[in-house]
Image 1 (cartoon, helix red, strand yellow):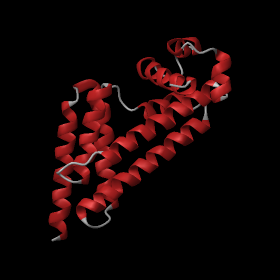
Image 2 (image 1 turned 180 degrees about the vertical axis):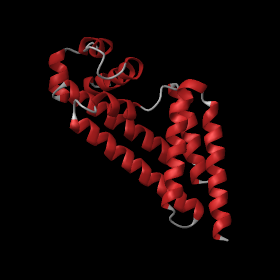
Image 3 (image 1 turned 90 degrees about the vertical axis):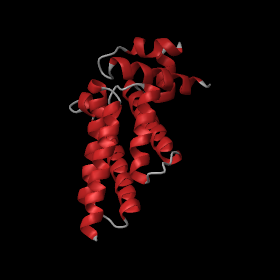
Image 4 (image 1 turned 90 degrees about the horizontal axis):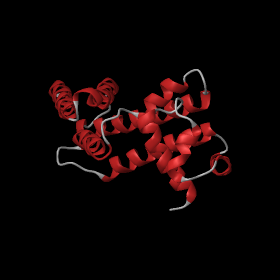
Length: 182
């Protein structure tokens, strides 16, 4: 593993457990054994590292989402992917939303990146609703997105089982939309 990748991986683990802004750079770099100079060489700044971690996290989730398919359809796959993600990484909430909250007044570029990533994800959900429903339904896509984001957050408190409840709620909404179309 090259040094940049090693720094990204260890920083992601540190940010996941200790937050993004509240942790010192020495703590962030310690697991990788990198120096501050190496950080600046690869990322330009501490905030550059945060942005790289957020980009990497988003790409990892989107890749996992694209690779997993469920027999229950595109919406089922969405919640199955979340369950697999949480089971593999733990229920610590959405790093992107935490970054947006922590950097809301401190770094517009980080906030903009998170907004862009969440918009991309919302578009993915809208495409999945279209796939399963057979037509575009913006309100339903928003509702499924809210269920997904809510399940991600609620899993930190109530455990991963809430993801199944969100999945069932999404199925209920999809069934109602299908019935309304007939």
